[in-house]
Figure 1 (cartoon, rainbow, N blue to C red):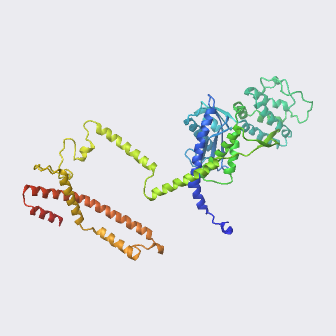
Figure 2 (figure 1 turned 180 degrees about the vertical axis):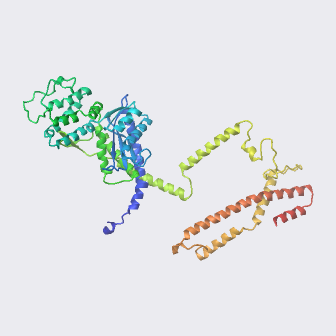
Figure 3 (figure 1 turned 90 degrees about the horizontal axis):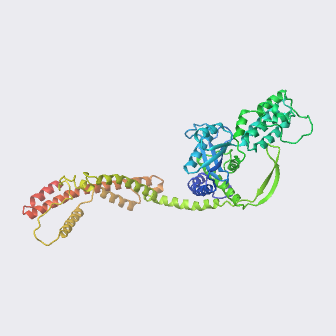
Length: 548
């Protein structure tokens, strides 16, 4: 496209590099600061009992081979996304099974919130048996509620399958009425009584609306709650027919009864479903992403969702229009309201952080290019050095232990120091009464040592290096390797040559350091013989023979 338009556009690898090394670090910084503010708001808004959370998982694939799973924890009171856990199929404890991701995500999310000193009162999840068992065994102090929409969904599906049978002609007529009745009795606080009213729907479809005490599967209630209906036998189901037996198996299903008793009248997972719909804007299920990129996309969704929730709480969004629509799966109507758009300030914060990330990358590149440790590495190395020195200091302070000074002088407290083995220990000379201080003698000795070092001839490596440098100046290239202009390996050869020369110089310096103590010892011996009045020719000849 860039070639057609005549534009110099960056290639895909360049864009990917900028995203990974510049954009994603900026998003991480903004997301981290944002989540700290959200945690403070949720703590301030929570009651003494703790926070109530809605929890739900979302997979990145419409099939059964999902790679990533996002488990969302939303605070029901403030509608803020408090925590998000991204699970990958290759992680430990999952072993490639997609069905284990949501359970492990819920466990990790709860452990993380508890570690952050959050008091959790209750959570509301879908009707997942694995999560229910985990909450019952591992998190007994947290109340676990179920979302009623996930429970009644199974009833809706079973009634739809019965309506396809020829022997069940009246099921399609009663299907929507039964679903509406389920939502009606779900609002009752007395869950057991509400379950009995749900069972009374079996008597209602047969035309019986009172005297329920004669029905063995209905208890504690006597009649229906509705007013008197017109006499009509149309679409009634015979209680002795096969159709009634199949409907009875669906209505009195034990799993539905257990889920109905655990469902909450005020808590549901609708905030999580709204968050999952926003994920489709940033990470659609039809587009695959790596786990690292998928996590970064989810962070953008968190910033987007929490910004909308914050504006809704303040009441800054105005209603632009509204319309009536039919609720999907229910025979009822709902009002949909369209509000003004939200100013997503977090996008500007990301761009502001991008400039800081670029500056930091340049600083790190400069430090690496000049072989300078950055502040983090320097502080870490300094801390490790201090930790290593602390036990040594404690050992030095104990009785009977040798200090570092005594070890450097040649041994422990009672050991003798040999001046010949340690050249730094000078022999003590008798004072002849002169007023000249030791400072003048030291200066004379240092001057003699410098003169001796200057008289030494340069080593073979230095001569070769000077010859090589002279050749580079005259010819423009080194003795080995090709020049850069020819497209050869000039840079690599030059680097290796520099490393070799530096190693040779280090070896020469070490050799000089080893020879200096011998020279000092010979000089002290000559001075001692000169002061004692002995002949100086013999020791001088001996030193020359050693040097030869």
